Length: 46
Image (spheres, rainbow, N blue to C red):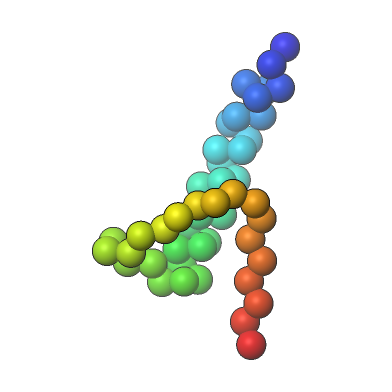
């Protein structure tokens, strides 16, 4: 059994959900370039 095959549907769903939230919060435009370096996201807004 390959754990990655089992988890792939769940990870894809939550990853796309997080990315949509990221785009909404930061108001990403089509002309913007995003470099994904992995890891977790932590936003601190002051």
